[in-house]
Image 1 (cartoon, rainbow over the protein chains, first blue to last red):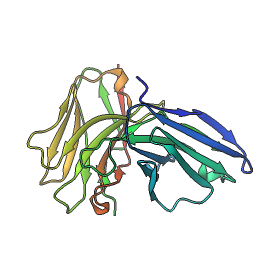
Image 2 (cartoon, chains in turn green, brown):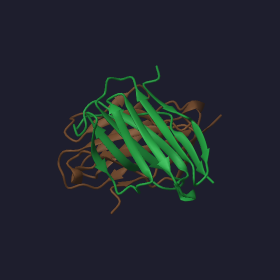
Image 3 (cartoon, rainbow over the protein chains, first blue to last red):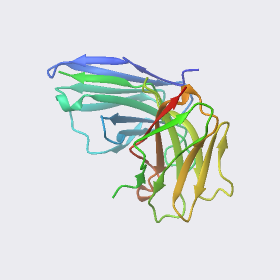
Length: 115
Length: 116
């Protein structure tokens, strides 16, 4: 069962391009998350959506723009990125944001390379 | 201040042997949750096991068990009967109590290599 899917799995883009990452969860969850995983750095939380409402934006540059049209879908729109934005972008979902036992389930990630 | 510490950047274990991956955490909040995830080279973070701070018993899930020592603030993952497919990065995570337990804080990870 693929509970959380992400497309594309790999993306190469130039600094002037505009692209979008897509995440879909099939678990009936209400919260969705974007994380950035760079080499040799801990996982960084970027955005949190709870019942389609954005609840967290951890000082992420405006060149990253999230969108959550419904509880099952989450997008990350990218524009004028920098080479240091190259990383693995992971999407996750959980049943209820903020509950103590709530477990996050992750997708396979999108490996982004910015040239 | 780093809230999750994993002191073993890399570990090796012989197939079929048990291995312990260390995790220590820092919080003054009495209520928190601890999680372990596995990340194979494919990239997906796979949830393994959860331990609540008030749980009376150590968590177990198949070959995974958690050695939870609350006074020492440690939550070590024990993998029994290692398999070649266990080779991966392993991350310890905690619900960040300083943010009302709403966000996860991840450790730097331990890379486990299982030798045939």
